[in-house]
Image (spheres, rainbow, N blue to C red):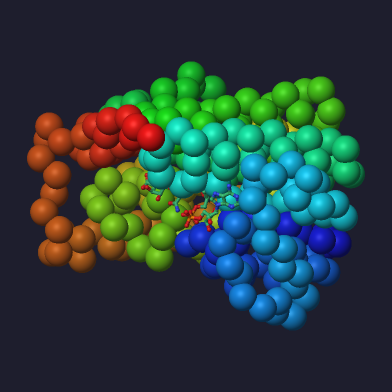
Length: 265
Ligand code: NAI
Ligand code: 15L
């Protein structure tokens, strides 16, 4: 069991769920976000923090032996918020980790680091990134920082390229990408319990029939996702038209992100 697990981005969609579901993982759960988090629950500490504020991030990381790093900009945006949350934020986090006990980290990366791969390609962790947005490119930077701090200082990170982590798949594309909250929790458990982690890239996806991703290189973690987005296909077919064959949502792994422009400041 960890002594103190830090969850950044705990006010967000995934963060709120992990806050509810991970209390067994550590003696103390430290939840953080720049947005309001409400009162501390049993075995919790609440610390509001903007990831762009280096001093605040150092206070945040102090005393933590595990970090689930969900905080940051989670969709395409203009450069300044992406730079604050996903560029400065990740450097601040790893600098704090380097100097304050070298906690094991789970970094919430995204499928948008490889968004321009086609849906008819099966890819693994070795492929060259093909980001589809400033957002996706900022997460490629985060993956690179995790690697630098592993190679130079031995800090272990699970780089999780999350597909679509919501209560249910919301589009036909997400039938391939969906990650259930339950499967994300079991991944967090495997990562923090593994005797040796290293710095692997893991595709964060449930046991979906129509997956595009190969996770065989991380079999050593013993992660066995149980949910399958296929159980939602009939319901989705009944409520949502399928995207046309020429639609980005049917061609590229990153879907509509590939067709979005630059969000000017
Ligand atoms: P979200 O947008 O709901 O939550 C992100 C949280 O980060 C927000 O509460 C926000 O206030 C906080 N945040 C943003 N900038 C910050 C800053 N500068 N300082 C401190 N906190 C800041 O996103 P969601 O869906 O919960 O995703 C969590 C993480 O997982 C994100 O890093 C996202 O990129 C990644 N991810 C999520 C996917 C999904 O399907 N939900 C898919 C792929 C990646
Ligand atoms: C992401 O990276 C986003 O954080 C999430 O909101 C979804 O858009 C997801 O990717 C997706 O591609 O479905």
